[in-house]
Length: 322
Image (cartoon, rainbow, N blue to C red; front, side, top):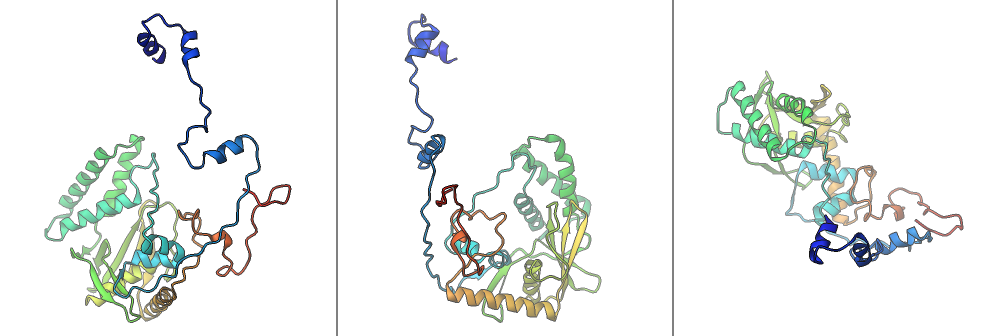
């Protein structure tokens, strides 16, 4: 095509040699389109790339007593205070994951489920009607976000409908619940699903679409999110018995109790959150495997939180390098 265009632009009599002679050759790293191009060029030339040790001077950010925090934010903080600082205080956006082979992401699935639950807020629907509506929502999403592997769509649709099938009566409200915990931490939010048990108490349900079980029974560290939701519902005047994480792909359920012991552990977590917010110091945590702030967090140079020094990489000459 390039040859044909070149020929038309030059009277139609150009040869392949003419095109080759007219072609301007530019080195890969020559165009100034990236600030990191010189690093790539140096690597190709087999040069040793040294780095200067960075000094991270993070600002001390004080407690905002007027701000409310969601269960997701508190859970993020407990996993890594510094990651929480980047996302929830400084507002540094996390890059989105883009798995081209994924039918529907967990985030999109949750958003879709939440939209469907809102449809139930002011309407009395039969189960069959609600599942039909759920299927229509899912099909509309797939039409707007076509999948590369169409054979997997039916199974994903079945999983989504299973998630939307209420086993018990679902208690719903349209607005978030707002309250202030005894620690002084302001909380808000509403779980995607709240089911009414036979004794009239409520069960907080959180669906998981992953293929690995990451929660443990009655463990405040992994069940923190549903415990906070349970607290919010209790402050709303409901009796809450506990919560469940339902892994729809695995067919497994992890239960979490909600009693005085769990409330005490929740208070300890929120007191820790408040104390660190007041201090304005946000050390790195241990949830680093999938963290998207790893290139800017400074974890490699922080010793206070871990209690040991992290040695930089060295080349054969003993000089610090990457």
